Length: 363
Image (cartoon, rainbow, N blue to C red; front, side, top):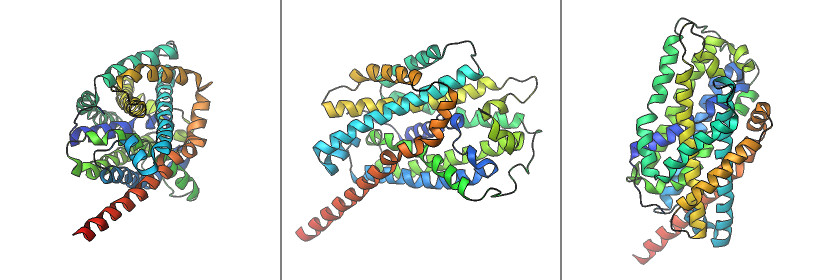
């Protein structure tokens, strides 16, 4: 594993940027309509608990990365097999995020630029960052991630005179079921995707802060999404939000004479770049661990090339992209985000209790 250390602040920024990622593009709470704020709160609480599970797994297995945890708790053969599945999962996730951003940019900003060009340029920057090491990615996140809430506030200030504070009423007009469904989608996208940080957690220089940092990042992003949701719904109305394709983009072009669209693009590119970088780093370091290679950088270019090709090939059009995110991804992710981590948590707790009992008996 790479001999690198990141601070608690850098981990917080990495996780915050990762969680922001492409969530505004896909908007998992859209089906809750004007009750989206309830879905954000419920999903955010669930996401915080899920991140607590991931952090606890890391703390119960000190100095072990994800591959080593899988091997020690499930055996070498099954552990390596599941690790390979996670390599696919992280690579697949990176390709999906590539396509999210490529589709967004070519639909809203660069209408005459081929999708392949946008994704390839984005990929070149990301592979350079990942090859520079997780410390460099952490330092870059310290500089760029604080820009995300600043831009969100700037856009909101510009919309201060355009508002309808009754747009999210009545509460639970369509019942609780759409809210629960949207909250679960919000749980799996983006919170469950932070399972990739089990390859990052061993680099934290103060492990005692791990749970706190994870919880703070989840709560901060939940608060940011709540802020953005109320901004968008009061400016556009619940009906228009439900019908729109890219809601934040529409909000950013509402002010006459002021072009705020580039600010939104910057925000999304920061979050998306960090998310893809973490996924690529996790996939390449896991693959290096499985094979026994001495340097994860041997795999970054080939994995990223595969991601780029897959991102271009995976959907026929933008409607397939939204359909996959809404109907397939929440269920496709269950074993990777919930089942396997919970099994690892239980096995790690059992191992800890056995060790504690053994130590007590010896004393």
